[in-house]
Length: 117
Image (cartoon, rainbow, N blue to C red; front, side, top):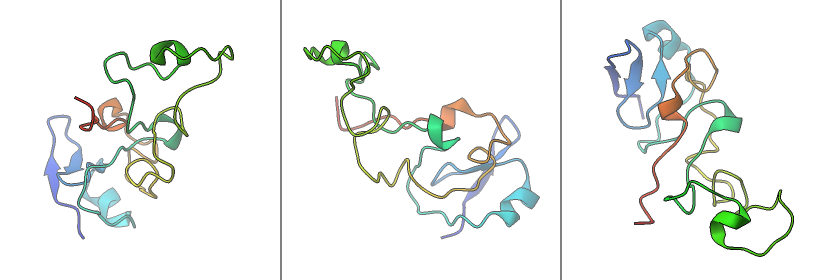
């Protein structure tokens, strides 16, 4: 699936479906990543976040969950930022300018979770 690009107020091109962002058409044409048609978390892999539970506190620590675990490095879920192993929203091989670190777009690092309300 091809990216459905729109120009954002920040002057970057961004896919309306998967949220991949490019500085211009030239970098978009160099991209090998095909749009999956669903919103993804973009950014450097270490900064992508999909699901944060509990969402009201943004806290993955035991204190945020009311857990009695004494180890301060313990957290809940298989990853600090996502509860799903092999998450297709966080763990994808995107080569857009945000994922490659050429554009700073913190709003694309995180997807809001709709399963907890």
